[in-house]
Length: 66
Image: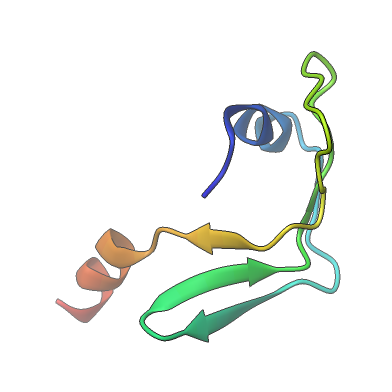
């Protein structure tokens, strides 16, 4: 899941998906290797730009399979 400052960074185009991928682990999807740069107005401590993020795809998948 995304932190609030990550959402703001994505909205301003501060994301790099080059070399990233999605991995299904169990019944959950995770973003691996996507880099979300630090939002210029946020100062998070010990922020990892390339951390693994859980993707919330349940609703999207339900719509796809209906």
